[in-house]
Amino acid sequence: MSKDVGITVKKNEDFAEWYTQVVTKAGLADYAGIRGFIVLMPYGYSIWERIRDFIDKRIKEVGHQNAYFPALIPESFLRKEAEHFTGFVPEVFWVTHAGDEELSDRLAVRPTSETIAYDSYSKWIKSWRDLPLLLNFWNSVLRAEIKMTKPFIRTSEYLWQEGHTVHATKEEADKEVMLTLGIYRELIEDMLAIPVLAGRKTDRDKFVGALYTTTLEALMPDGRALQMGTSHNLGQNFSIPFGIKYIGKDEKEHYAWQTSWGLSWRTIGALIMVHGDDKGLIVPPKIAPIQIVGIPIYYTEDEQRLVYKEIEEVSRSLRQAGFDAHVDDREQYTPGWKFNEWEMKGVPLRIEVGPKDIEKKEVTLVRRDTFDRARIPKERLIDEIGKILGEIQRNLFERAKRFLDERTKTTATYDEFKKMVESGVFVKACWCGDTACETRIKEETGADIRLIPFEREELFSKCVRCGNEAREVAYFGRAY
Image 1 (cartoon, rainbow, N blue to C red):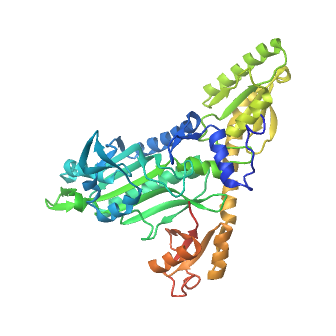
Image 2: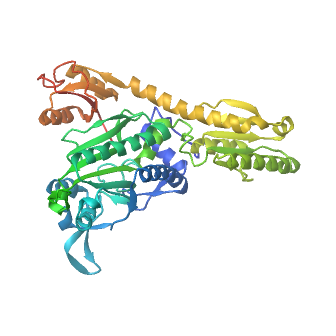
Image 3: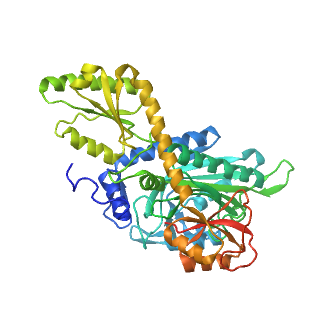
């Protein structure tokens, strides 16, 4: 593979350019012909399908169903919850005409589905027997990103799922919030091999219109935090203006309690950043569309026929055993070119089969995470590949966890706090609980509170900025 085809910059020297090259050259996405939008290419979409299928299966197991709502939302719906409307207006794309006719009520192109869904919920829910209502939507949303765009991380349109549930009590809604956050954590840590911190957002950073917001936060190699998934208790902030109420078992009328929760394709961006290296992408085996790629190696036509037959047989046995295996039998490329391309695409494991391997009844395995090579007897291949893929998955998580642990620092002084923020870490510090103080920290350092841990941590100093009595231990960082 020529230099201009492969990744031409080092990850630790020009992270932004490295990231862009991996996205485009690994065939994950391409830039669209309109600013702020990307095209999700087949390989990138196949990774999203794995993410989607995992979430879809898990939420259905606990009682959720999928539905779909219109992409256009009347402005009058958005205005029903004032805080929600004010928070989203700067990002909204508006439809003002139907053909040549100007609309009397502008239509927002879906920035999120709360308001359009809850108009229907108010008609569907009448009795306690209608609860809980547990719906999820797979769709795209549009939010105008003008200041900065980055494929998968910040784009004007992105794919996601958004859950919207309705409950009889706050306690039931609280349980739903933590249940779905737990499913997200399972995906991110167990499947994507990305360690996260879990907690709640401050009132300043909670979802607009929510009672409270819970979050999972990861740290990227460039020192910026990335919000991976959020789950919100909306309280009765939408049920009251939208009239979502029910007759309870006590035969009295009650306003319902609601939650919403969402996870987007920015998880793919995190996967690229956390696991990729100077050769390109590394995809954890549990989420990889192709776990094993087979490369035939031959020098004559007779060898070609023999090797192709052998590698197809090996690949077939792997697929029958439940692995996702692919044979690259393109004749127009050399084995070396193929090695580099599949390394750039991040396929976890490579199998090489040549005449000598056939003669010895072996195959050669090469790990993408470490580039370790091993010759494995053919009769042990299925068992060994299962073990090796498990080792790759664990290794990717463990080295990402070491990075997170090493880049999580604690301080009691503001001078040290500012230096730590500049170095690109999560900073653990005590905070007074005052939103004004939180805002000043953001203005002075660029860091905000990424989360307050669920389990209250012991205070170890006064507020890191103002010196007043502290109320919380918080984790700060600069974010995308």
